[in-house]
Length: 206
Ligand code: SF4
Image (cartoon, rainbow, N blue to C red; front, side):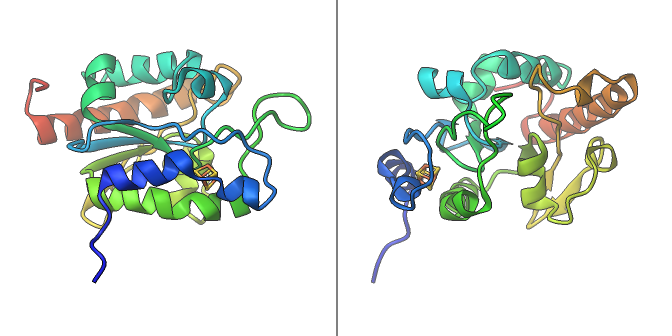
């Protein structure tokens, strides 16, 4: 009888995974994720960008700064979150630049499918009480009907006993979060995160 995998075993498989390359998908094989096996909250992004690939940590640069500025409004401190909670993405390896040269390539459906068992394993083993999908691709993992961002940001959904609170992508290139009405939706989402943070950890972070 085979024993169920542990999170460390899944991470080790991700670290050595070459499935995309073997299927001729053009990615840079270095799985980017971070956090604690005891995490109770998870941030789920789309895929690492080039600075994440080089630094080896999720949401490393400007996107990370903006994301944690938002989360500061929920009382969440960046270093605490990075070390005690969990950050991962739909596909774990940097997909390279888009053909147009403006921004990074969105991982293809085939790449998402290849990487999906890793994400399912991470979620299954961590069993986080709150997941924050960040950006369209991560949101569509939980909302496959592909709703408009304005219809899901500021809302929450309960799924398999955990809460899902979507956030837009915090990239500086994104115009969505710069719009005043949309910023109000982000504040609403941050308020939801604040509520879950308090429920999970009490008024003060551990
Ligand atoms: S993106 Fe996922 S499936 Fe593709 S090589 Fe990286 S870890 Fe493997």
